[in-house]
Length: 143
Image (cartoon, rainbow, N blue to C red):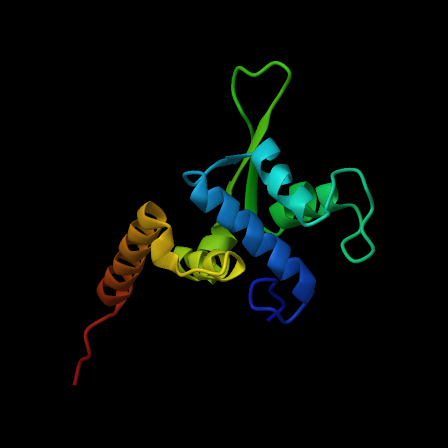
């Protein structure tokens, strides 16, 4: 398996991706491009400035992560100049959980997930829904 979120390939990219997924989650499951770059700039990643590990970060985020389906990148309707936003892509939903991303964010901030009360509740609800889906998706054993 050659996945970014499982850490087998491009470990530094995993941290950037999880950070972006965290921004999206904290901002209500949708974050503007500006909100994402505001956080990435703190980590010294800048749009248009080549990074020695990631190359051009804008391309990594808006092209590679989107192509790999970790992120969705879409135009915000009725914006002039054009604005864009990020959402979790289907592969991010499949390979991680809101709880794991929230745990990462809490660790970065030196706290625990319950320090983000609304996101913590949403992550717990997401876990419950995933558990129900796993249970209902299982076929009964026939003996």
